[in-house]
Length: 191
View 1 (cartoon, one colour):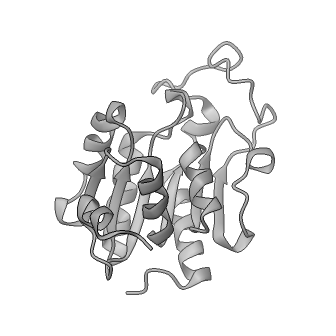
View 2 (cartoon, one colour):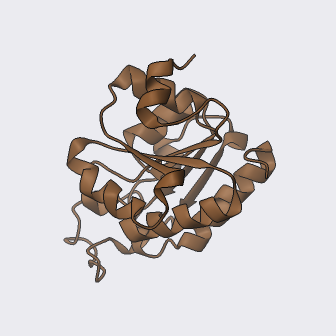
């Protein structure tokens, strides 16, 4: 059970419908655009009665602030001060986790939280998420070079935004549709 302290830190009430989003990645080239995460958050707030927690490290705080600038602070919280136990507790009570192919995506799936994973250079078939297929949606391009060796822009060209094409071409619409599918399938976040 998540402690009252964690709920207080993230500004969430037990009755809130909670989506946790982690926009970070081990390498910036593996991370989907901040602006696209911001627009996705706008879409989620319009579609569902949710509280969104943007989760990251102190080093990712500017990224989280950029994303949160797309939405009212009434529906969002930025959290950068949790330890691993607290993050795990937060993920357990989240109705949905959305994020890049990252450690937190895999931790969310391990604790049983439904996940929407954005996979660019990585390949979900080999790296997960390893959870019931009903509890996951993966948005990816699966280019012929997937999974890539991640020697970014030596083996592929950079987009105008310094992202590999496999990540650049994933749209907000596709991620929003993945969220809609999992929400409908699991009966999450009812209006």
